Image (cartoon, rainbow, N blue to C red; front, side, top):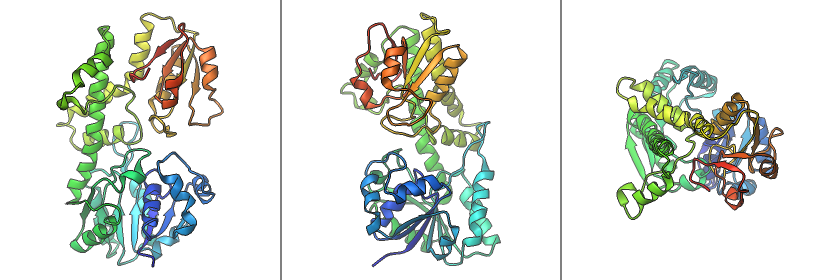
Length: 390
């Protein structure tokens, strides 16, 4: 017997799709609504639209689930629960772009009805859930509202949805109990907060990670400047020393959430959160630092330079906000002939790993995919590796 009817807005994205299949596997009747026609067609053909551990097995079983993929918002009317996985982006000045989020929400309103429950799932600027609550009241819609932030890492959503505790903030006890009942099909661990506490918790989670990466990158640049081996120092610092066990490696801190959420927190508390912009300066300027450090001993003008790995994260195919592309632009500005490659990405402008190895005298590790560990670089090739990878 099927359980509650659920619609997921943004249901073929990195947040929505793992959630959709995870809920459908628990006998919920799920409709994923999205404007991305190409991804919808891929999923219907049982093809992964992006790399996600455990998702391939679920996609193959979709015929045995009550799950569908569509662009049609009319399915919202039939749903008891409406998940919204659309977050708040930042603009070119690193400020929250509220217009995009609220414009998307306005498109949903005509399809809502009394008695439904809306669950906001992606990052929102603190105070957004209260504003949505006021909008619903103004429209005279008697709808339960919850903010239940996802905290999954890229590519691990299917696994982490059942392992991570779920934070639930709700407009009333009835809505809270309904959300808890749904999420207990995925995880037994539920944490209750109010709206603002949940919103800030989500920002703190990603900002904390971004700050840790910034500290590692700052230490890395100090070591390079002083001709010290960062990896040797890091290993000495961490060996059997529990208080340093969470110290990350250096490398490009990128992706669609870390910088964005850090800047949202900075906008939320500009005078108090000075660490945010400091972290942004460290992480975002790492590509420039690597180039300037290289230029101390190498002439790079009119030189053929390769970048291995263009995704923002190892063993993944997601290029959103990848700093490897920023590296490419800065190398081109320096007059380099740049060749890019990635084993997980198809791009007509990319070349093979073999061509980079045979063509370029300087090679940057743009993303540390595991397969690159097998490469035996020629002695005359200068490899720039900020990840401690090679």
